[in-house]
Image (cartoon, rainbow, N blue to C red; front, side, top):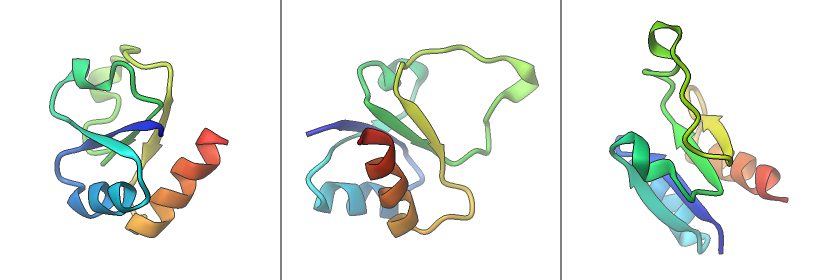
Length: 80
C-alpha cells in the first residue's frame, strides 16, 4: 500500500487514510517526506519566503478547506 505523509495537525486525515489501509507517517520535519508517494499539508507554511525545496517526488495535496473524505479522494486520484 502507498506511503502517505501527513502533517501532524491533520489527525482526522491521518485516521481516515489509515482506515483505508494506507501507510501513514507524520510529517514533523522535511526529511519525513522522503519516500512518500503523496504528502498532505495544511498549507499554512507552504512556500514560506518564496523558498521551495523538493524533498519528495510524490504529489503534494493542500488540505486547506477540505474535509478528510475530500482529502482521501484526492490522494486516491493522485495515486492512480
